[in-house]
Structure formats: structure tokens, C-alpha cells
Length: 151
Image (cartoon, rainbow, N blue to C red):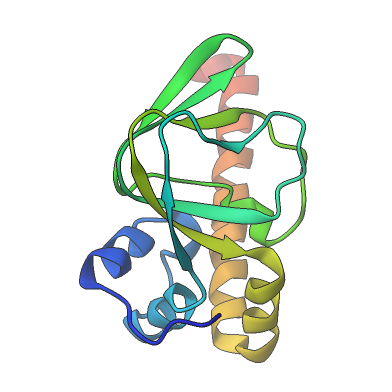
């Protein structure tokens, strides 16, 4: 079900997702319209380590914890996001995300997102540029760490 209205707050949160950093406000709105708002009870597991990622989550209200094994490695608050790379492929999840309070999330389905990027070359190009920039940053960081003179 496609929504027809997006809040300013949702757009601001979506603009904070590095994958979408190159997108215009209009493009962000196109992406946001794909999201489905879901209310979540405390204790609800949103992703589980080893599961296949097929959704991207944007936390609108409430809190969630990210755990690996029995260790909490991150605490998410409104504006946090996870699973964005699942929009592009379906990697095994590397952590478990669990709501710790009542929460409201915006959920994006990978199949619907793929349809959007197939029909919008400008969004696709911006995503590719952002991904290549991130790869370049990692490559440069690895090169610096491998250079004994850098450190």
C-alpha cells in the first residue's frame, strides 16, 4: 500500500541516511512514500542475526537495542536506521535489533524499492555515487592503515 503523505520529520530522518544523502527533497519524498508505518511493542525483534535482510527500518519513535550475541553494541533512538543495504541485496543480518520501548517505525520493502530505482534513473545514479564514495573512503582508510609511515 503506497502512502500519499509524508511528514517533515520523516523526510528529515530519511535525509540523514547516508545512502540517500545525494537525493533531492522530491526524490526523498518518492522514497518515503514507499514506507509503511508500523507500531511495535517492546521486546519485538525487528531483525535477527543470520536472517536474510529484505527490509530497511527507520525509527520514528521509541528506542531499540542492537545486539551481537549477548552484547549490546548500539542503542537506537528516533532518527536511527538499519537495514539500508538490504534494499540493494539480501545479506545475512549481522546483529539482532529489538525494540526496548513502544516504537513506531517506517518499514521499506526491498522489492518495492527496487521498482522505484528501476523507474528513476536519477535516484539510481545518486545511490551509485554515494556507494562509490563510501567504497573509496574505506579503500583510503585501509590504505592509510596499511602504510607504516601513516601511523
